[in-house]
Amino acid sequence: MADGRDVVLSGVTLAKEALSVLHLPGASILEQYVNAAYEKRKAAAREILIDAIKREGVENLQFEEGDADELVQMMMRFAKAAEEGTARQNLKLLAQVIFGLKRNRTFEFDKFQAYANVLETLTRDEILFLGRMYRFYTDNPDKNDYRAFLASLSGTFETTQAESLAAALTRTGMLLPISAFGATNYAPAEHLFEICELAQVEHTSP
Image 1 (cartoon, rainbow, N blue to C red):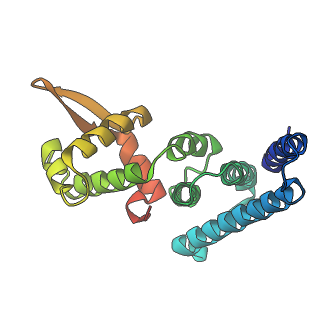
Image 2 (image 1 turned 60 degrees about the horizontal axis):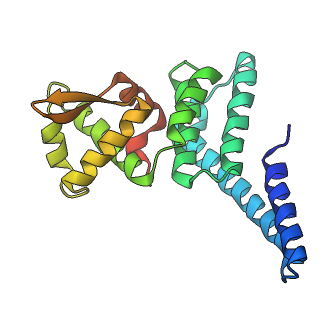
């Protein structure tokens, strides 16, 4: 199976062939640029992992022999995301989930894979929205008031924008639509609290 680099270089080969046929300049240096961009992605991913380790605390990350297979699979999944151009803020969430799973003693690749499938798709605004929702309902566990939550976002999102974000996030399973007198409200699912806690969403600056 081709790795991320093979996929990138295959694209470069196609581009070089097209440039050659059209007699356009630049074919000879295109691969150099892509190689440099690829190395830059790897360096950024490495930096994100190191930052996540520092945040968690090296002394709190005691891996055992039985963790090796799961850790390798998680790192491969993380590397794949980086190679494919996943945004930096999303990579930060993935890294934080890896060590969050270890902290919570639920260090299983299947769990990480499920969370990664969700976290990779989030936009900058969705990450910010989720962080605010997680904090609001964590600070107000007895207050099941979606409209009060929307009001708390007034300095960040307009109501129509917040409603659109909430509707879009139902695809992740973290928000549940609730019919409310002809309108639609949204409630946080347990899945939201699990992911936000593991990924430390509220602490991740998009």
